[in-house]
Image (cartoon, helix red, strand yellow):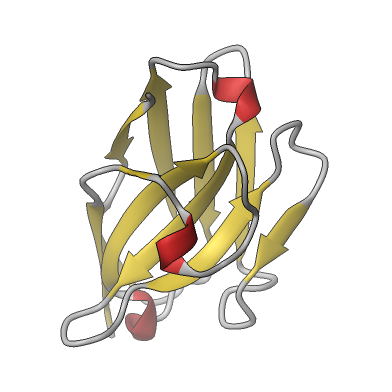
Amino acid sequence: QVRLVESGGGLVQAGGSLRLSCRASGGSFSTYAMAWFRQAPAKEREFVALITRSGGSTYYADSVKGRFTISRDNVKNTVSLQLNNLKPEDTAVYYCAADQSTIATSVRNWDYWGQGTQVTVSS
């Protein structure tokens, strides 16, 4: 089993940037597809971005495409999310997720989750 710990959240003004990191321990990191989800107050948890096991393919929600970039380092066992040109509607708790058998965007398909890191974007 893999354990995930997110970091890098914070408070920024609209138009600013943040870089989120997720460190994985246990298991074999390179066998997991990795993803980022987010959940705003009173909203369902939603897909943000995913990256395949080798890092060869990435997928993004339409709402963040062109602004966010997901990447992974299979030596350091980390996955990152670069958030650029942030908007107030990006405010949410951001979660790292891992799975060995899916690259689907539905929350229910992902087996392992971190505790989340708060991103707050002021207007």
